[in-house]
Image (spheres, rainbow, N blue to C red):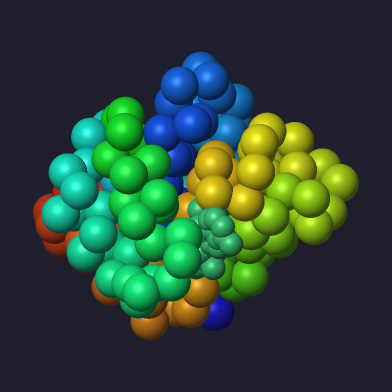
Length: 141
Ligand code: IDP
Ligand code: MG
């Protein structure tokens, strides 16, 4: 089934000059880019996006990190996008991530782990809507 997922190239990815490298891996894996932008999140926007994690011990640090530098949200589309993208990025903690995955290759730790990915088709749509309006999502002709 064709699905959509929201990728975010996190502030550590931008700081390390890895955005091109990571986008190349995403494209080589067959994902189509529907929308892409570079923005610096406010604490409010970062906190709202990660509201599901509010109250967890890492929440405040996560909000701080995500608003510390620009990031690059990317709306992606592909058959089986949710599972295939999570396979491409690897486990949350790079220590547990499979060899060759984006997080294994580039992430320093569980918090600063280079990329975000949606966890279900429903959340993929909701999360894309958090960053993109309908007219910013351009289907391939
Ligand atoms: P995911 O990004 O692989 O879906 P989630 O459990 O949804 O992982 O957590 C969201 C983000 O919160 C992670 O990508 C990571 O940046 C941060 N995070 C999650 N668990 C921890 C932790 O135990 N320590 C520090 N940061 C964490
Ligand atoms: Mg998650």
